[in-house]
Length: 362
Image 1 (cartoon, rainbow, N blue to C red):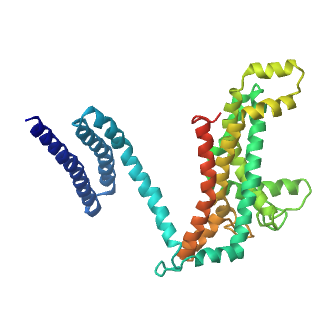
Image 2 (tube, helix red, strand yellow; image 1 turned 180 degrees about the vertical axis):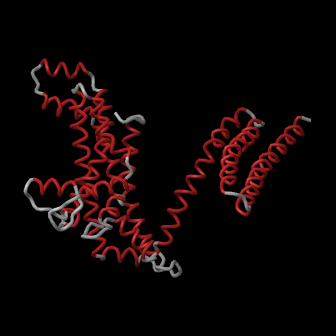
């Protein structure tokens, strides 16, 4: 009798485990088809989509959670976390993993994504003069941009920590972070704006002319100066990010250690290098690797300021040009994979550092 009840229960659990997700899938698929093929006003579409999103997610989790609660406590503890994490993992896989795999496959195809060409696209990249120039520019962004952001962020964090205007100073430095990269590019395009003649509307040239100098086309200077002027925009934006995290790390340094060093006669510079820097090592590494990833995939500023002209191309602008303008899917996908390969080691290093610190920054 007990065996029959146990078998009956497992049949019931198997039945509802299959039925409930299937019903959810069919119902929401029908709703999607209705909204896709319907002839409603845009406002009504928006209202229905919002209602569907909120109510749909709630009913999915509610129904799946009900199924899990029919299991024993042992199985419930195993399955329940998957119910809440699973959809997010599926969504991430669809949005991140699937496009990555598809791009990898396209990188082995020709420009029309029809014929398999093996590693020809990768061989072409190695011998392409424009790409080598873009890689050089990316390296310039990574080295100079990252070093400038982190060092200036650290200096400002230390100085602001001792200032009576700390909150105001940090707010002003952090403010560019609230501006998008495209908007920042537009702002600095007006700062660097140049036109022949004495009348200049660009801020930098107006100052130069007012001081008796000669206006310059800053963004179209010869290498490496034009890239350096573009990197200034990155420093203007990302210094605030570095400053905030490093400032939080400075707040965590034990005051007793600093006071003991001062009592022993240590100078402020010695305290900075011998006490502050070792304490902030983990934070500095995390900030540095984050900004490195950002600079490796830099695109917006270059595209807005120069469009990649005047030898300012980076890998991301080359990818955009090849994939979307020239419709060379194979070569463009290969550039995207090269960029991904360059970023992955930095991400792995960053994750290891965070794991060593127990999930924190300092």
